[in-house]
Length: 157
Figure 1 (cartoon, rainbow, N blue to C red):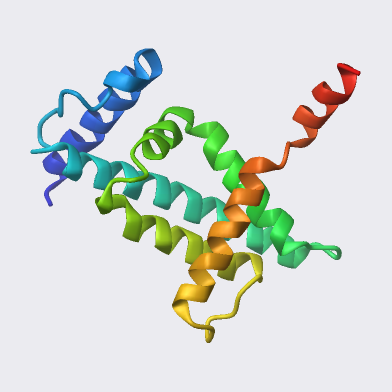
Figure 2: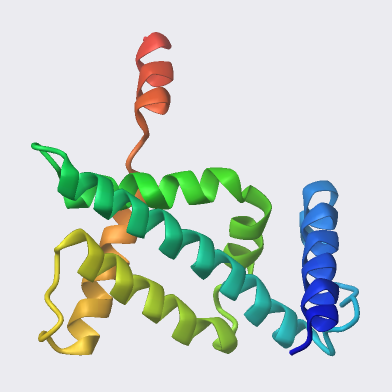
């Protein structure tokens, strides 16, 4: 891939995310060049998410190692939440198309990474089990209110 191709792809992804900001359901109706179809675009969106999430998880784990009371589960949880908060349109598009067969393998890789990074699974465990643990972990992350959501809920009482 040339630099020109790279920049065209990045511009197309930015255009799709801008469209998603205004019309989430219509963001993938027109696939911008240089992408040839929605499947190719979804893979690129998933790649963008994976790069950002992996970077944040790596930084969180390094910071956790340096802390006396480092909690890997909390570090990975916060890294996922920060990535989702920084990329709401991207996360929404991927969630909207999570049943797409093209995204299943990528989701499994993400679940595996989350399980291993959080320390809830070990590399030697069967892959299917590691993926299942990561999937359960992510469901808990998404279902558990953040501190600010908890505070808002408590203030309603």
